[in-house]
Image (cartoon, rainbow, N blue to C red):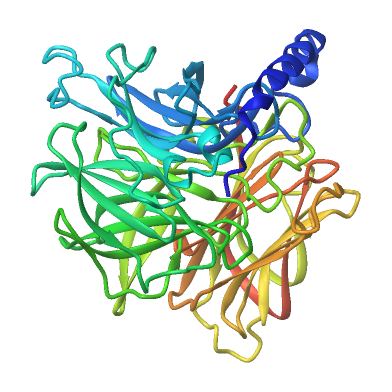
Length: 523
């Protein structure tokens, strides 16, 4: 849950940071070479980061805004940080886009390109970007005015996001009497020719409609009797997606929840159904999960993508221990952008995730091994050619004979270093689930909730399965079975993992191919 700092502390925080900045502005540890700093994932230059916000493509640039406290590596009064990219991989930091003001902190939200100037906030020749965000008023909270704490507001830009003006008549959607009422996601619904706003409202999603992005009408509510109810619903997203290899389209409703993740803490559930411009409907009562790891939260997708893809990015962290990690000048990073797909598995639908193709821009040296047989354990890619460098690892397993007597009960990959710290991923063929074990993946004792194992139920039905593993300094993103299952976890080893070991238990397995590719840093 988003932590709240009293407004009276803001001046003190500003003063403390100002003094600290003077002492450390020439400190090399504040650069992107510092310990645990991601090399291929977005992170703020300094200060705190959580939810991605305002994802929009406009005039040749991908915009990434994010929840940001620029004056500390701990959560504080929320701003919107800002970065842009031409390729979703290399990012350029821009000045802070939105600052807190008398109406409150700037909580999460979205952005759209008002290409037809329906709002009237730009011109036909220069249509605006419109940002939607939640005002969180700490004064109203302290005074017990619960239903005035969170309301939805608008800001706009006519210079491609370089400067922003807050709308004079904010808030545009007032609180209807719900304490947790936040994170507006605005999407275009072409059939009804209206804009739709999804707002997280405690443990439901409320839908509003508008013709001009400024005047909003309540339409419906979804969530009663659906999904996980262990925590607060946050950061929704709504979009259509075609089913792979068919012409059918379904609507996806993404709902982040804190807590409620099967792995513990924060996570992302999704629902597959239909949306008619007023109501979202689905026969799916139980939640499906976007990621079975601990560290992918608040994920939302870019609007106005130029090529029709649906690309999501999340906050690579978990509120169970966010802010406690062993980082100094910054806290928080983003997952790799992921292209989403949808496929039908018998009578169910499965949302798939794969790293965007643009990741190939980072490819460096590569090494490949063909026709491996593993019985017990086997190190691969010896020589530490990738020590200290982010890498992509691809493994293709032959699982065409999973029912034979000597097929392993478990098989997988272990990443380790000379100190014995290791991170293990594998498949349990007896119980039929993927799993990740990071109980020995850190020497830092910062939270009892960090050391953990995660499980993802999955029945392998193909003859070959491909795993893609993206290893950065302090994270492992694992895309199993061509993206059907994703497990994202932070790791904090004392030294880089530099040894790869394939393993089996009680049997042997063939690998037609294994490949490792160096990834060049993005900064």
